[in-house]
Image 1: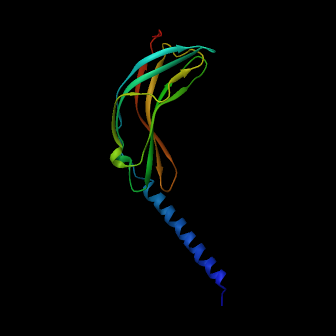
Image 2: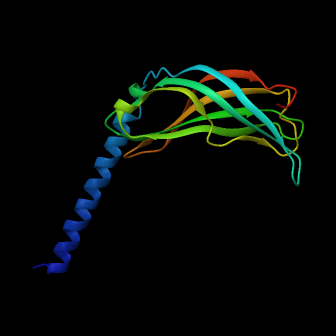
Image 3: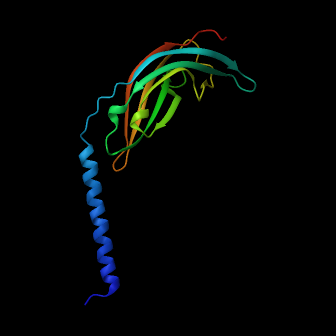
Length: 170
């Protein structure tokens, strides 16, 4: 007869193999669901831009924005949470792509996936250390990262809004 440890080993690894098979099934069952989210960016406007240069010259902009999005269709039974963030992207002479996160939020419930933000201020200011933020076209894009219970992360984006930064400080 088998010893107790051999029986425990068999039960443990059978349960582990079963759990792995169920996880693969869960991942494959939601991999081909194509949601149709409808995020909309209602309005984005620059509220304030200042020049701060106590030690080194830099441009720093604080913006006020309006944002409305609906990501409730992204949720299914394998979605644990969404990480939603609004990115400001611009080109400068020293860098081809500059990206700054303006707004970010973790959404864990389908009922909170539809939001309307009026006159929100950015968490993180737009900073350019070489004073190249003046008179630049800034594109705002809404991204969301789907974090499932089982499976790979999935980064998606939709919506774009372009704004021309002022050429003078105020």
